[in-house]
Length: 115
Length: 115
Image (cartoon, rainbow over all chains, first blue to last red; front, side, top):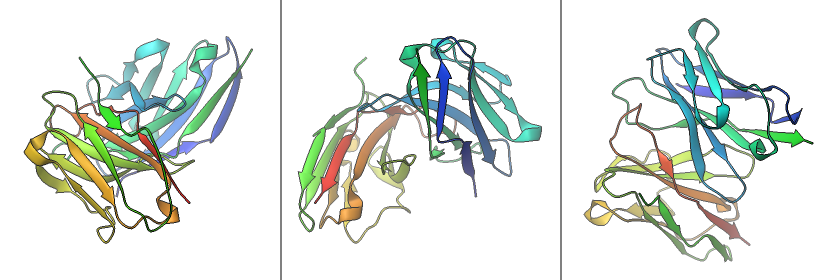
């Protein structure tokens, strides 16, 4: 069965510092991977997704993630944090191809950005 | 393009009462999902529809939860009777097709509190 593990339920960085949010997946075949962001009292918004085209995926708001099959990881990074990046971030897995599209989410990581 | 609409945004009920949530997906999206997000956890799929047919309801507590998607557009999710552990945010999402790589677009959610 597929699963997702997000290391660190809370991450705190200073404004302007590197953001690194970790995600590891468990899947017997190459999956599709997603990062979503959730601001308070809002739904989830897609940041980026990996669909086997390129291992380095660029998303919105300056975020990117790299798919590493050997490490079964899909970590999210941003070179310079902004105060507006403070939110909860979810990594999710879907697949393999032909799957119904059901997303399996990690438990989430809350990003705090300090001035 | 209008996003996924949900109502109500907030609901407070006593245990053993019934409650219903409504979702209107993005126009033209064939697939509709209901997720349950308990505080501090990632969303968990309750039920998935393709047009007006159920694709996956394996995680739906069928003794108390029911959902329908008449005419393949709007959907309602009902809980009867509610338990304390049903307190959560109920998220509706839709996607253009039923596929593992298709992006799911989320509504703002309904926050349910059961007292």
